[in-house]
Every structure is written in structure tokens, then in C-alpha cells.
Length: 207
Image (cartoon, rainbow, N blue to C red; front, side, top):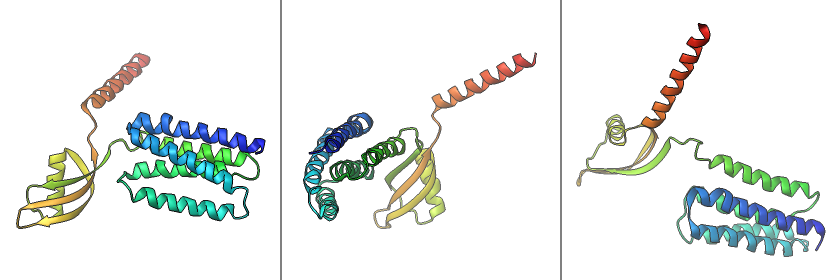
């Protein structure tokens, strides 16, 4: 095993730790997926490191990626966000185990994966956007009326909706709705206070 391989293994362990304990767990708090992400990453790293010594390493690596993905995604239900973390753990293990050429390239790719997930899953990014499946206790066929009813009940601005079930017998509507929440009152108060302070500063400067 070369020095570059040892460096990539260390980089994989560091990247997996940052992914799981620095990004995922502080934001989502699912212990079972912590075990899954770490186990998948280390397992893929070990297998990919062995495959790197063969002539068909790339093909076997891609096949392993696909097989593990199918097995995992068919087992228990996880959100699309957690699917992204799962594939990131897989990719980090494969890149570190199959790394070839200048060592700076795989390390840069590991950093890119971590950076993209940190930004894309940051709580401040699209923080007011929400998605829910809502069942209303009345059958509403008109989309305009349905949108108004959802906005009244959710207290938010509906950006998109898709009716999944319209039950005219039991008088109910099942709808997948995307919406933007209103700015919280505390945030509004802080914003108004900041605006008032800026106006006071400008008035004072003018004098």
C-alpha cells in the first residue's frame, strides 16, 4: 500500500466524520442513519481499495455503487435529503478507494462533496419553503378555491399543489402542497427594529 493510498484512507475517514458528525447529525439527529452512513462508507472504501489493484476496478466500482444503492433504497423509507447523504457517503468511499492520478484530485472532490451538502442542506437556504400532504375534510374540485382554503388553513402562501385524491363520497381531498411560510413575528420585530435603528442613524447623521 502506497503513501498516497494511506493519505486517501485518512482523507476518507476525515470526510466521513465531517459528513456525519459535522453536517448530518447536528441538523437531523437520526442515530440509525449515522451508523448506516459510516458503515456504508467504510465498507465501500475497503472493497474499492481492494478493487483498485485489479484491471477492471472502475467497472466493478460502478457495479458496487449500483448494487448497494438498490439494496439500501429498497429496505426502509428515507427522505430525499437522506438519500443525498447516503450517496455522498458512497461516493466518498469510492473516490478514496479508487483514487488514481494526482492525489490532489480525489481530495478536492471530497471537499467539493462536503461543501455542496453543507450549503444545499443549510437551514438558512430556502428556510420558508415547506411541503406537506394535507387531507381536507371537504371535497374541493376547483383549484382556485382549494388554493384559498389551503392558504387560510396553513397561514402561508401556496406555491404549488397536486390533488392526490378527491373523495366525493366521504367529502375529503388529499393534496400534496408546497408553500412558503409567513415571516415569524419575532423576525418581523427584529427587522422593524433594525430598520428603525438605521433610520435613526441616518437622521442623526443628517443633523
